[in-house]
Image (tube, rainbow, N blue to C red; front, side, top):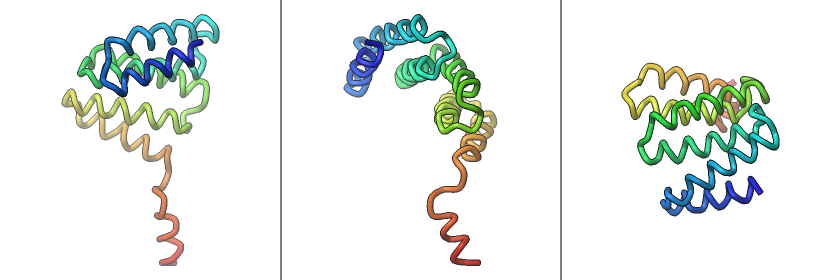
Length: 130
């Protein structure tokens, strides 16, 4: 049920119908917390989706704590070097850029880039030049 609600919310979100998306994201989050516990990766995904919705609407005060909570769950459940951690770091960095916190944003972006490793093609270039 939570996944279906989340997917429907995502559809509304993509269409820009935020008023319909928000309660569905919230309901999906509540179901996941109840069913899986507050530290499950699916809860982190729901938190991240809701944060993105608020971020898109410019409601940074609501988005930031959700990104941070999502990030903490991802790190605890999947490890600090997981791609989901990098994705959330980038989302939080975008929010911080939007609120003028450039130095903090740059640190998060660098951390996310370190997690992701070299961009595709960089290893190939290195091997060719060696």
